[in-house]
Length: 287
Image 1 (cartoon, rainbow, N blue to C red):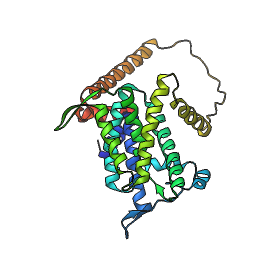
Image 2 (tube, rainbow, N blue to C red; image 1 turned 135 degrees about the horizontal axis):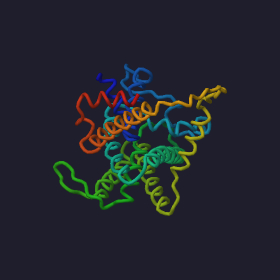
Image 3 (spheres, rainbow, N blue to C red; image 1 turned 45 degrees about the vertical axis):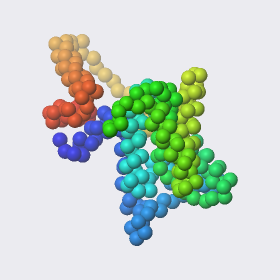
Image 4 (cartoon, one colour; image 1 turned 90 degrees about the horizontal axis):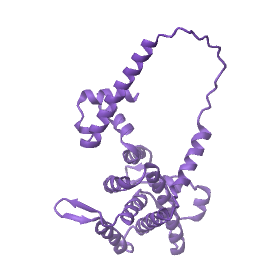
């Protein structure tokens, strides 16, 4: 199996957390030839992708409240964000669904983007912002709000509670808010606040992520190609070979059983524990 096929397979079976990392990395790689200024060594994102602090820009380009959360202004920015995203995703998906994950990621980015625009407008600053940090903080704080005493084992430190880790990250944002990257820290804290509100509403029976799911389903149905079903006259043969039908069912059940065994192995030991034959079989079955 080639590396590309291996990546495709991991994308298919990895769930929403893996897909989110792939989307962020893929968008970053695509943005290098499009927006990276090799002479100055910085990214120059247009205001139709990055979120602008100008209120009128949001009125005319509201989609930037989402698109900015998939772009980054450098490799280190992307690297550290993806590390925290992977960490936060595993924790969040321990307790919540993939639809809630996607809904919170998108809603957290929108809320943080609006707070960024409002705060910079009041401060009289003008700037553009990119980065997934606000959405990531929404996921992390949401999990912390739901399970603050959850214990985690960190390398060289030992066992710590989840709220200790989240508290340190929030404290660093508060301390650095006036030093540099003021807009970024405001967005981080805003995303964290939204994650807290999301869980409190969820505990009271209101799941905000359903709104996102409804919007996605609407546009998916709207733009999906409609399949025509022309009338076909079918002649039925009363003499059906029942033996062949049973053999097909047995073959299908055997294949499904092998797929289930491989997926169980992935959930217990990880994707890397699969043999090359098992990866090849799972890739062909996925087609």
